Length: 365
Image 1 (cartoon, rainbow, N blue to C red):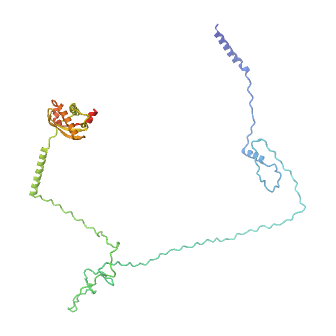
Image 2 (image 1 turned 135 degrees about the vertical axis):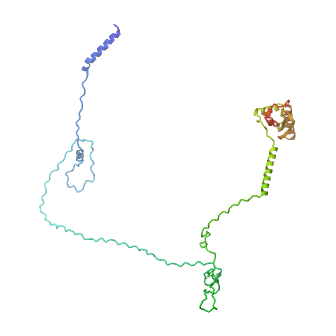
Image 3 (image 1 turned 90 degrees about the vertical axis):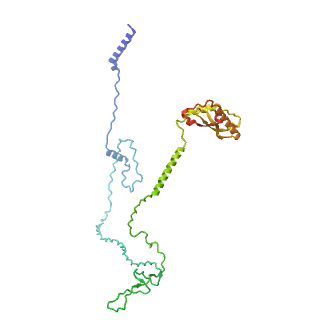
């Protein structure tokens, strides 16, 4: 047999023996500790506390004054279950006096009848009622009317139909039954006068500039269209014809612009490179600081017509300018050879050409 069989048999034997005999070697469980607990109500607990807080000298009943110090309740934690012993006071025999006290008769109290007290209400002072005061009408001083004459007594201006005279006279009518010699008299009145010199009216007395009533607006006059005269019509026609003829003449005199598309950037660079090949710049001379612009007229074959023209120059003196111009002129004439290669269909754009010779760009290149 193999060793594994022995080990397996021993293990199984031990396991079976432990299952069968293992319960005999177990110890008994320890006993459970039990404590008695009593439950009391809250009223019993307060009575218990009051009994514990009672003083020991409870028998001394004739103490005149209460104790100054309030006894402190004992610690509630110590001995909560011990009930204090209640001390029973000793019974004392009553002392019988030798003499009997005399009985004093006490008269019953006399009932007091409440007197009627009159409550006096304080009288408040009555406020004085302000009575309405009637203010007398103050006569308004009449406004002084401006008058050209000043008199001791003011005189109102007379009616417009009354004649002005020094004596006041009422109008009379002739009596039919009276004598025929009596004539009717016209009513007269003195000239208006003022008792004081009238000054300029106050601002409040100035009459308003607003009209008292609005007036009906007037109708707008009808615009009459003037009838043109024959002479004016002829002059207008002549002026229009003259203006039209002048516009036609100005249009015919205006030079015709170049036709066809403009030169491209490549075509312009080709012309510049062709001229630049023949341009020589003397770096050590004063002409090297001069920039010149020349004008060139070309035919349809690309050859120079006439001579090269100096249009403008910048920098240096006259000698340096002439030197720079001659150098640019030689470059244009030398490099034309059989003519510059330019498109014939764009001849209107390169018929007159302006070329700028700048030595600064040459040095940078």
